[in-house]
Image (tube, rainbow, N blue to C red; front, side, top):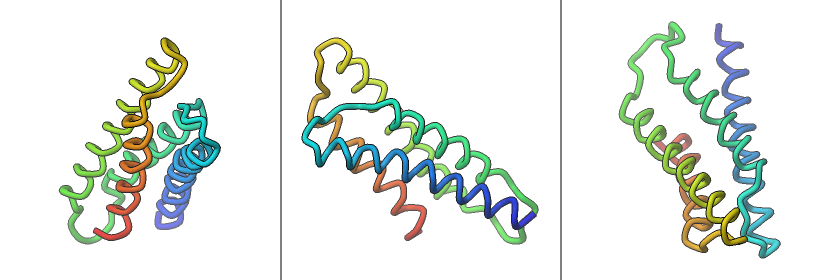
Length: 116
């Protein structure tokens, strides 16, 4: 069971890396766009994160405060990606606040996972 859980953790990290990596590419190129790759990274990280939040028969208590906090942050990132993508389709660009907040919250979510 521990091997399966480790595989899900790796998939969760791949989702985060895809989302944050795509954001970094856009930030450094100066385009400031929401891409499909960001949406895919978010979906992968969210599904794997929800799988990790399920009790896997591990001993000890689950940290529900941490799980809840990470869930709120990932929902906020999803909302920002949705709003930014919609504005991008209408106006051709993403507002700077939405774009930068997406990257900051993505990094915050990973930091919570590591530091909490």
